[in-house]
Length: 376
Ligand SMILES: [Zn+2]
Image (cartoon, rainbow, N blue to C red; front, side):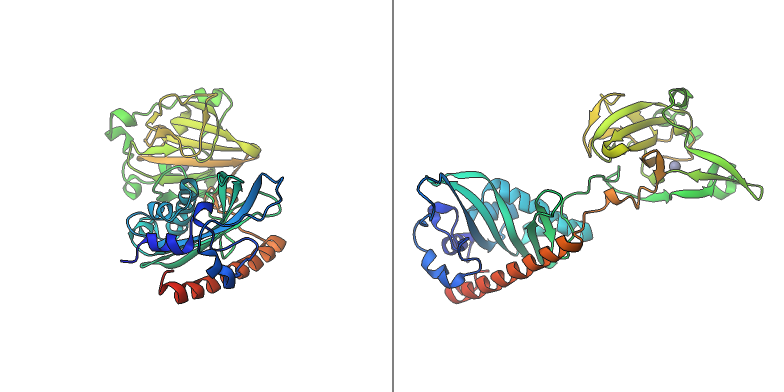
């Protein structure tokens, strides 16, 4: 079968294999035929020790996406970066990034700096890439640097593929109680909600609530009671995420633990301070992860504790709060949990780039069809 070796032969790898698409000919594939032979001449000033070129690779995904790219000549770190970006693009809608490894074709154009002896200098910068999967069709990503911020990969829609600064603290999220005013679950008839389960479970879910956290002045308690027409209501300052007791709880973002202790209604409670005066709070934990205590730095996604039923809780769940400049806000709509989107002049500039890249891609594909009979 036509393997990636074919693509590598046609499309060329790093400098030693020649370059199919030169930076001096963006989309200029008419010249492509002349580039297929031997090493590319580097058109650099003699005193310039480095030269930057655009390299295009394409081929078939066989066993693993990443390995297929490397076989075609792509640097391993670039292959991994692209795999992560495309997995993220697949994952955000279908939660099945494995589709990337099953079959299909890939195309990647990247810019690489070389020393005069042909050594690669630094990591390649992805300009444009796409992958065609059987199940999902085509996904294209574009490298772009907005006016404010670092270069990263974007979908053609202008949505970033970089992970949001803040994530939700469980791998699988099921919300049982949303942010906002709600009836107090402890003031409802028992038959409505079922008896509180914490008394019926032992070990990990023993209620360890104390006033220590409040005494430390770190937290006000999980909600403030109010009365409405005789029924008890609470302002619910966070969201309740249901998960079995013992499920790992992950730091929503990198930061410094400012408290990890039993804390009244919160039960076993953690508070983390993040950049830009944002804090997150985790309540009702069955236990803290080893080493998690006040003053310790944690990374986004690090396990900080385990879901439990301690404190004022009617069953195993995680109470999660996001506090922005002292104000509790809804974690599910907090902008920092969303992927970045290009706007205004950046979006205009980006759209132009997308059009150029797609045009170059089309021309490239047409050229390949003529010369290789179906190589993507
Ligand atoms: Zn809650």
